[in-house]
Length: 279
Image 1 (cartoon, rainbow, N blue to C red):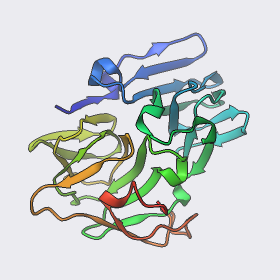
Image 2 (cartoon, rainbow, N blue to C red):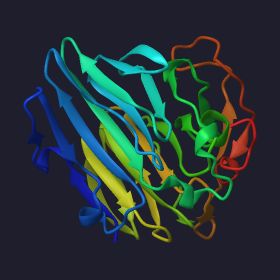
Image 3 (tube, rainbow, N blue to C red):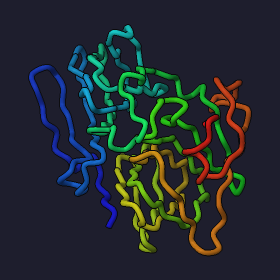
Image 4 (spheres, helix red, strand yellow):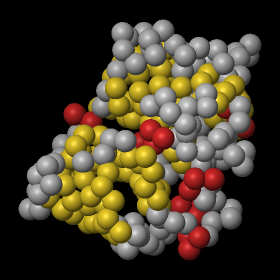
């Protein structure tokens, strides 16, 4: 059965460098070693190691504040508008002058999830996700922005996106075969139906869903529901409930700020997302 917990219920470990870390997704908590996730709180002036294991891959978002990510690729100032993809073996540090809260996910031994795994071919990247193309659901006002895809990351070990549900929107009931996945609720609240059992979720929640578990979200709140969602591995089959519509995502020709996006993506259905070359 899916696991739901809020980051506020997880005790932080502190070190002498002004850094507190909450271990969110752990093998003990979710009974799986597909992925780990952490939330780091950097006090003003703090700096800490942010390296990646030789066989792992990782990615990070800033939830609050701003930070500087330092590696051989240079120094990149990152804020809530940025998404960082961290390849295997990256030696890096992260620092914050004014303080920051960072979300980080790591896939240990990531090559087990990609038949064409080539760690040496994966590169560090730091993008402004607010410039990425926005896709609209053909059924309602939901929006999707891709963050981890084969085109963007160079691997099929993971796939991920940011999704926005305005009030009153919902997905159709479905399940996935061949991958676990998880959502981190960044903003808002909603009712999450898991195997036909409704459960309330809110900002700060992590929802970890195993393959073959039926699920869908309804934003029955009064503000946008915003969450990040990741699949491990990034190749899987989506199976819709009998009679449920298969959602198609159509390009808006814009980024989330209303300007021209950094690239173009053609319309496609959700099941096609992990096999298309333009995504």
